[in-house]
Length: 72
Image (cartoon, rainbow, N blue to C red; front, side):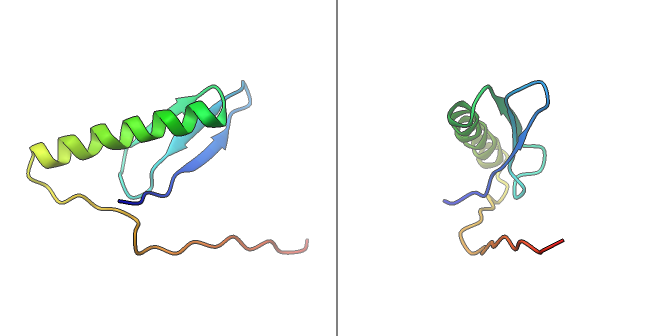
């Protein structure tokens, strides 16, 4: 299963991580490595709850993402 995660650098330090395909799946880490480890743990927990409730488990395996930079 594949999940896209978005890391936002916080002004007080560290990174907040959100998982767009899993609404409300948000976590935090002091650095990128920790943030990604926390994201993996949060995703695993989220999926476990979905399965326990008999709900479908979405993923991003068929999602393509690109970033475009435009000159200002």
